[in-house]
Image (tube, rainbow over all chains, first blue to last red; front, side, top):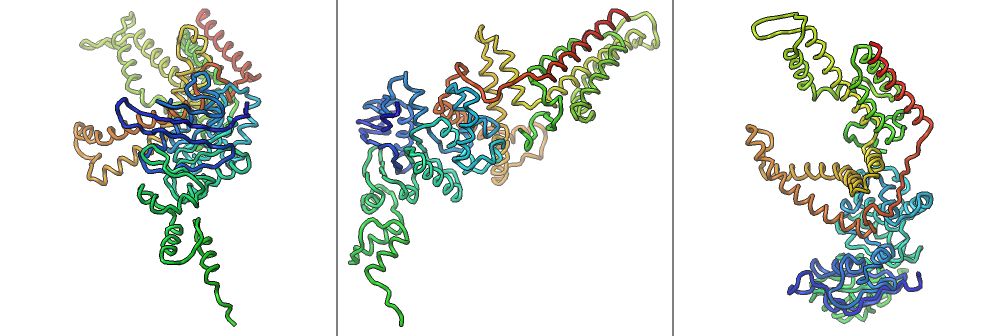
Length: 284
Length: 267
């Protein structure tokens, strides 16, 4: 059944109330297995709505959403879809159900009806994958925000999904928590070939993805490799989105006549480019 | 399991009583309550007291902790004693003064009722002191599950208890945060009379309720996205298993009940 692990959206429109402006309108996109895709957008841009469409929490008003070959409109497959495309939410506190970490990881497995003997190794390996084995018996409220989000990831991971959708999973965390959660997801993406859909409004996070989809007013405006997307500084500014500082600086230098190559994202890359153009003289 | 938080009365130490199956403990507590009502003489109460004392020792629970459970009930205990003392009719009059009449029968009955009430409270706190709330809700779910046939929501009840337990610390933390935020804006929670203080709670309770509802919405969505669809077809991580000690506990309780019944017949 794992033959088609693709996610495909065809002309998807979603309207919360009849007559209101659609939160997502005419979106078409395809996400390949094993990809790490960042969905970037402002508050109210429709990115969270899109996440919920991918998990069959919302049904598209028009168009179709195919997750791993299943149409989300078909109610028969709701549980199949939710098992294959797990979702991490924004608030770390509001997605942990039980009073002990390992029992929370078990929650999804219990719902799927996995036998107890099989559950235990799956919980252990999921906790290990997010480096939380030490805390298996802790109470969730004793953990930091980043740790709670890692527990939430483990809870999804135990269900053996092919896709994880993170709906602004780092928005409520401090910088170190943000880093640990993003790193965990990138590691899972590399090592377990799990497709990640990373919904965020942080540029620096989107810059680490394989591909970025920029969404504004419910439409996908830009799509491509992070470097390609961020190089369109003007288009991004028009949507009131920032670009990484180094990309902006490189753009200014280019406008001033420096022939820098496109696609600069980090300080290191910019330094390398500058050095290529004006090599440091060896002091003798 | 819940070592790092104090919730309810649970006294987190390890003992043979703590390790008993929560289902067994729950049923035995009910049997104990029956035994308390069956006991009719001081010999019976002495046996029950010895049983409570022995169990507390075995459970590593200090006897003082058990007596603490009586504290909130002292008013009711005193009232029970006084009402029975004054209003029971009897033959042997000890004191007669104005409209007050104290008889031997009244005194004994007052004593019996107070002891019974105290034993009931102590017996049930022995259950809650030695059983964590989580295993207690497990036990309730399993014991009530036969009632599912008549559409009694046993699973939902247990799930509600689990979620409530999970969110108590979160909401406490939030209360504290809101309280500080309101105090920073000049709110005063500590002075004034009762009405004034109750009114001061409004700016605390309103945001707390709003946030609790928002949390509930979020949690429902998170649970659904993790394939939660009620108790049907659900398996469990925590499986309760009966051990030899559970059998022994049942035997001890059966012995106690037999003794009490015997005492009722013989004395």
